[in-house]
Length: 172
Image (cartoon, rainbow, N blue to C red; front, side):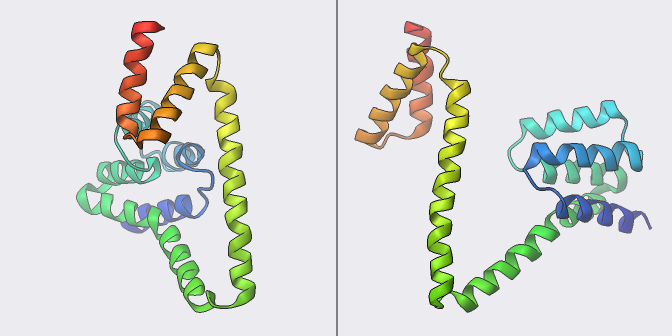
C-alpha cells in the first residue's frame, strides 16, 4: 500500500502542477506535510532548500527525495515516475497528434498563430522582469553593453555574466 500511496500522491501532484516548480510547492507541502505527515514542516523546508540548490525541476527533485525518505531507492523511483507520468502521457498524446495532423492546412495555421503567442509571452515575461531589474542607470548601461557584445560577437552568456560582474565590481 505504501508504494501505491506514494505513486498516487505524486501522480496527483504531477497532474495538477501548473505554473512551474514554485507554484507546485504548496501542493507538495499540503500532500507531504499536512495530509500524509511524511515530513515535518522543518524537513520540508530543508527539501525545498536542497531542491533550489541542485539543478533540475523542483517537483522532480522533491519527489525523489521524499520517495527515498519514505521507501529507499524504490520509493524514490516510484515518486519520481509518479510526478513525471502525467507530463509524459500528455506530451506523448500531443506528439502523436502533431505527427498525424502536421500536414493539415488548418493545423499549420494554428501553429503559426501559436508562434506569435509564444513570442508575446516571452516579451511579456521580459517586460515583467525588466520592471524589477532595471532599478538605476548603471544597470541599464551594463545591460546595453552586454547586449551589444553578445549581438556583435555571439559571446557565451557565462562570459557575459562574469564580465558584467567584474564591470559592476570595478565601476559600480
